Amino acid sequence: MSHQVSISVSGLSIRFPVYGVDAKSLKKSLARVTVGGTLGSSMTGATEVTALSGLNLELRAGDRLGLIGHNGSGKTTLLRALSGAYEPDEGMIDVHGRIAALLDLGLGIDPSATGYDNIRLRGRIAGLSAKEIEARMDEIAEFTGLGPFLAMPVKTYSAGMQARLAFAAATAVEADVLLMDEWIAVGDSDFQKLAHKRLLNLVERAGILVLASHDTDLLRLYCNKVMRLEGGIASPVTDIRKLEELLAA
Amino acid sequence: MDTATHMLRTGRRGALFEVNMALRDFRTSITRLGLAWSLASHDVVSRYRGSILGPFWITLSMGLMVAGMGFLYARLFAISLHDFIPFVATGIVFFGVITGIINEGCDTFVHAAGMLSQTSLPMFTFLWRTVLRNLINLAHNFVIIVGVLIYFGYWRTMDLPVAGLGLLLLVVNAAWISMLVAIASARFRDVPQIVISVMQFVFFMTPVFWQPTRLGRAHAILVYNPFYHMLEAVRAPLLGVQPDAHTYSLLALMAIVGWALTFFVFTRTRRRIVHYL
Image (cartoon, rainbow over all chains, first blue to last red):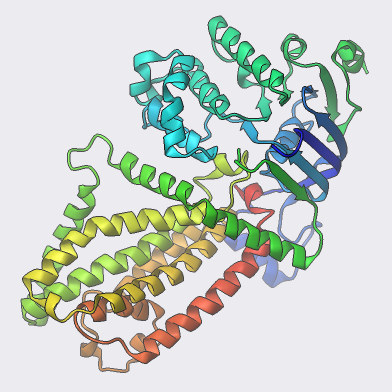
């Protein structure tokens, strides 16, 4: 790899229109056009929400950042922006390294397909060739600990089993930057231990972890830095030991 | 997730920048066509998982449709089976590709919401997924076409390279319509209903199962119906007839104007599509 793994975000603002049921209706949109604009600031009929504003963030290899904040404070939006799914309205996101986002258990998971097929599908999305996936299949299968269940459709799995599958498949790709939302708390204690080992392994490989969670114990376990989001505005990145102060602030 | 080791995302930097980003999305999707192929073949396989015939249900149901319409309408229109069955078989199969690509365009982004909201995969990948899925379906229907063309002796007069060119023109044009429909359907929930109704109407207005000669050679329904020309570009050479020059010029013009329009719309909406979902 020519570049060191890093995340650099400057002046990031993301606004997005929230399309309510009304805004999704073509009739209402057409009516709005013919009437020639009605109340409301936006001609598109959507309310604009500022999810993040003026966010700056610098992370380098070995950083494990915890994101805290109330519901709707912008944690997930930031993770989605870092994954490349959301485009900034202002500012810049520059990520060096391969990104793996575990934001939604459902990514690439087809409930009627088997566990094996889902691992293949997810691997393909992550950019592996069919050959590379087959080469890693045994290792991934072992890590999931699902054994014979892997040959069964995913819809027969429990939530914890799905989490195991998704986590195993997503982290099987050698990612440098791992973005995770909350759900890592799913799964039994055995799996938690395995996941913990794998996450630490990732960070040892000079990766970056960004984890959003409300669980302070979880954050203390995985992170060495923490940032608090409040209504889309970020606090400075501080050491995890100052988590209490940050929460109190 | 992405194999790229460097990702740069920035705010708006003028129209030219936006056009470049749209083109880059397109280029990336082409270099990762293998992914679109995997998704498409997964779609087909998983749809027929657990059924006895598997994807050959596509062939069977199409075969039934062709046989039913072929025999019935040959009788109704009093045309010989030799003339009519190959006409209907090629008509229904290739018109099925057009409607398939366009109708399924409605779900292109809606079904990909999960992936679009946490990866930097190119948007066009999902268009290719829809297109390739329909081409896989078409491949299953080739059995019928080949059988009919051999049985009725058309293999002696057909012109495969010209038919291949026609199929290319058909797909290129159906693809841009599909992309526009995909963007519009993500934004407005009424669009899928409109598209399905329109395509149904088009099916009856286009000489899929009735012969264009019955309408007179240059009726407006034929001359100005782009779907007729898309179909004719593939069907005519298979039945041993050269398509009109008018057909080619119209399809070429349509492809250029259509793709330009599609790129314009995509450039304007690219940032927003993920929020529509």
